[in-house]
Length: 30
Image (tube, rainbow, N blue to C red):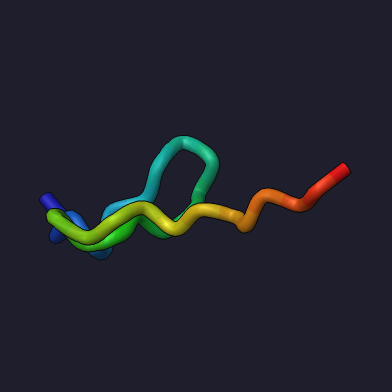
């Protein structure tokens, strides 16, 4: 099994290392 940081989700996006906060897009004011 690949390392968590090397694993990819179903979308093919790289997953953040375990314990690292998930990258969030800044909320843009409407």
